[in-house]
Image 1 (tube, rainbow, N blue to C red):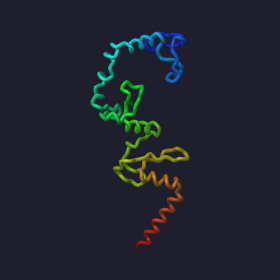
Image 2: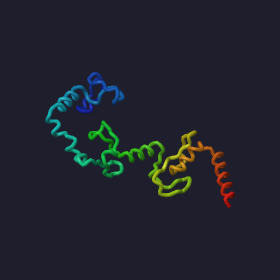
Image 3: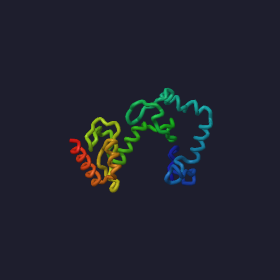
Image 4: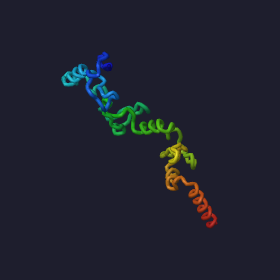
Length: 175
C-alpha cells in the first residue's frame, strides 16, 4: 500500500505508474487517477492562464533572479539550470552553490576567512581549501600561490627544506 500525494488515499502499488528514476519504490508519488486529472488540466488551455510561470515570477522578465542563500539579485546566467524547479533555474547562485558544497563536504568554507594560513597574506580573492591527499584530512585555507607550491612539491617536506637551503645559499652569495 502507498499513499497518493494528491488525493491522500492509501492505494495498492498497482494503482501507481512506474517512475524508476525519481522514486525509491519505483512508483510515481500520485496515483493514476490523479495523474489523469493533472494531465487533462495541463492540456486544457485555461490551465496556462492560471499557471503561467512568468506571471508568478515577473523578475525573470528583467533577466535577474534573487539567490535564496545570499539574498542578492543576480543575472540569470549566474544560476545553474535545474529542470525540477518551475523557473528552470537553481535556487542558489553559482558562487553560493560552491560555498554550500564546501560547507557540506569539508565543514568549512573559503568565506570563513580571507587570510592564507601558510604565508599570512590578507585580502586574497582566490583561496583554496587544502587537504592531505593521503588521508583526506583538511589542513587549512591557502592562497592559490601556496596551494600550487604544495602541489608542485607533492607535499614532500624534504623538497621544501632543500628549496629553503637553496634560497638561503643564493642570498648569502649575493651579499
